[in-house]
Structure formats: structure tokens, C-alpha cells
Image (cartoon, rainbow, N blue to C red; front, side, top):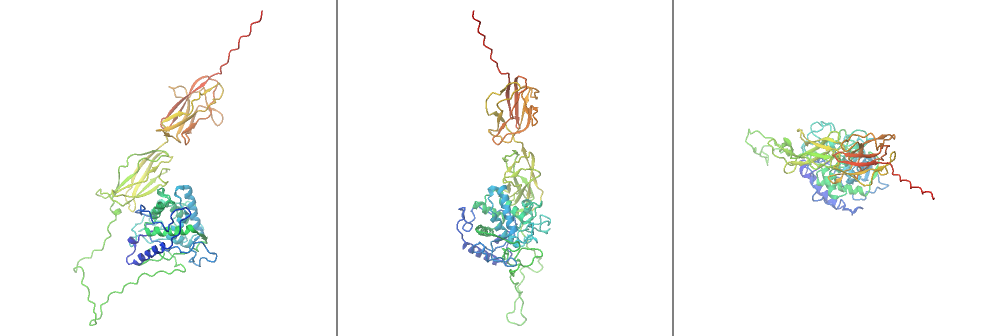
Length: 582
């Protein structure tokens, strides 16, 4: 869950800010050394100056658990175990199913996005802060939480204002969104970030396998390398827009890096303190039907102040009623919440994107630019615009995602990440929408053309000759290029033609053989390799002699004509016999 102490604490909860100072002070006293990779440890690291929190987050800036890891070593002791109810002192114990989900997510991302370098300990740190490792591992055999873990409704009353985006499908709330599941995704984020981590065909935010994999993909977007401190800071801030949250997650990350072990499901340590503890706050996320866990005591909110009561007439110190601040009869005006930038957006306009075209496998040279405007046409800054690639296509944004959310700049323009063309050709639709508003989307059309070459050339100059009924000793090999660069994966066709002026297939002369050994004079479905090379199969000759032409063509219009010669071997004349002696 996310928190920004200065923005979303409830009125009267000043004690939480004091607690945050204490957390920072205690954190500074826990400074470990340098890790085994030689990188500055999370305890000593301050967020990179250029790392800034984004306008959005995976959790909608919901509250989170503020418990710090203990000062002692995380290595488990044989004599120390969790107490009944999951409130033991072995903080490094992670419920078995939850730990398995984190490690499987790491393994999946290692293959899908090896450059991200996602450690499972980061997922464990976020899972600990967000939900206490799925409430101490209260999950079933498939990894789904026994009861839903829900954050408070994001109604603007002490929290962010996020009106319902899922019709209550995930959180059961059709008025406002609530963070859902062990990794606390808000429904609007889960709609594009959700993953199927356990292979059951569903994307369920209440399932730890699905939620952990989704969190991993979320943290690995934007080509971030989490082995680099700056990118790690950015990823965590994007998950939850709070510096206090960043520091806390990194503290738990370092703790789990030192050691963690498996404990039975349902016996994990339960946290006690939340970032929104204070007036009207409950000590744990709202879980329908949940009971207070053993060993934890709900923190009472501040006592209500006693109303000021006038003393009896004649008594000393009689309270004089205060005069009204407004004249009698003046209607009171209820305080109104000023509109957010998002509230002022009326529509989206294209911001000179231009034509979007790329060859299969290449990056698009242009990027989609969208401007958020008011009804009067004024640009609106700090508005989140979501770009979604629609339909059956393998074109993605850089980093392999099909959804990207970008905040508009001071000119009201959001620039999407670069598009990376896949192998499927045709038209791709990218839709831009305003996050948090039910406004019509703005569609962009991008075209993916087939791989092409504009030049073909033989790689050798050996003569291609053969005797009638024989086999050509040299195979034909060509290299394809496009604008001087290697043209890999380009489709090609090889045809034995009648003449330079007649490209129809000849019915005599050299030929290839198909899989059944039959003569064929046209080959289709050929493709250049990674170096742009194409080696044709062995050529054979029938009994017809003469000069023949082999034509190779590719997508993009490249053409090469190769001359083949079939001729009988020359025979030398017999020497004249010696005349008989006289």
C-alpha cells in the first residue's frame, strides 16, 4: 500500500508523523555493511536525486504496515519459532506458499526480462509491508487468500480519491476503488498489470502467485535494472509514491537478503502498525469477516473532546457563548474539494505524432504524443494518460509491455514509450485514455510492414556450371541488405526463369528437389538468417544444355539474377597414329 504522510493522513493523526521520524531514526541505527555485490546497501543508500515519485502507483497510495525488521540477525534459531496465531519473533520466516510464489516470479522474470535483475527478496519486502505476507500466509493450496485483503475505500477522506473503475468486480465496491490482495493492487492497475502466475487461466489479485508475478512485471517495466540503485528507487516509488515507503521497503529488502526461511502457511508473523494509524484508522487492512489476530491489540483512536458546557446560572466562571462568525440567516456553504487536474480534462488531442510505420522486428522511429485539454482547449499538466495496445498483435512498448501510463508534462503532453514492432504485420491500434476519468479514448494507428531488403548480392564469384544430368558443385549463396544494413529474416523466393524478359518458370534445365526428390523450379518460404545470408539448396541439371537464369527476389523489391551453365564436358581429339615404316 502507499502513503504520503504530508498528503493523506487523516486530520488529527499527527502522532503518525512523529512515528515516521522515529522510524527514520531507528533505520539509521541499523546500517549494515556492503552487500556481496559491492553495491551500496539499502541501509546506507539515499534515494538517487533524479529518482522521483510518479503521479500514480500500483496501490493508489493506500496505507501500509510500518513495522521495522528487528535489529538482530534474521537467521532462524532452532529454539525460536512462531507463536500460535502467527505472532512469533522469527520475522525472517516467510509462509511456504508465499515464499514459493516470490521465487517462481523471480524465475519467470529471469527468463522474460533478464535485464531487470529482479530479486525475490524485493517481492518479499513489498509483500511484508503491504499485507504482512498475505496476513501470515493465510492462503489455500492454490495460493488464494482465505479471506480478501482489502485496503480502505479511496474516497478522498484522508486518502486518494479514486472512483470505482471495476464495477466492484475485484473489491466489491461499486463507488470507490480499494487496494486488493496480498500485493495490494488497485483495480485500475490490476486491469493491465495482472498476470496468471499459477497457470490456472485466471488473473486473480487475491492469489499470491498471480499477484507476485504481476508485481514483478510492474517493477520491471520501463527497462529498469533493479541491480542499479537509481532504477531500484524508481521502481519502488512507482509502486507506492512515498519516500517513507521507499526507505521501509529497502530496509526489509536488506533484511531478507541476509537470510530468510520457510515457515508453515498461516504461521507467519503479523505486523501491528499501519501508516494511517490515528483518528478513525484501524490497525489492519479491512478484511471482511476477519478477527483481530492473536497477540495484537488494536490501537484506540484519540478520545473525543468533551463538548463545552455552560455552567449553571449564578455559578463562577460562567461560559459566555461565542457570537456567530456570520450574520444570522446567512446560509452556510459546505467546503468544496478543489478539482484535481484530472477533473478538468475534457478530451485528448493528438500532439503531432505523425505517421507510425515500422518494419517487423524494428523499433518505431516516432512515438505517440497525446495532449490533455480542458473544454476550452487549454493544456492540462500532471494528468495520467494510459496507452494500451489493442487486438491480436505481438507489437509492444519498449520493455515488452502492452500498457504504459505516462503523466502529462508542463505542456499537457504525454509521450508514450517507443513502440517495438513484432513479427505480425498489419495495423496496430494504440488507445490513449485518461486514468480516473470515463472520457472517450483517442486511437492511434500504427502499421507493421514485412521485413524487406533493397539489395541482394552473391557472396562468391565461382562459376556455376554443370554437365547434363549432373549436380552443380557450388551452391548459390546471397546476402540481403536494407539501406546498407543487414536484412535478417527477410522472405525470399528463388525461381528458374525462361529468360531475362520472361520471368515465367522454365520447364527444362536446372532444378531443385523437393522433400520427395521430385524436380521443382520454384522455392518459396525462404528467409535470410541473422546475418542476412541465404544459401539455396543444391541445384541439379537435366539433359538440356545451354545457359539458364536463376532469379532470387525478396520483400522490398530486391532482385538478383544468377547465370547457370549446363554443358557437356569437352573431349580431347585422339592423336594421329604413326605412319607405317616403309
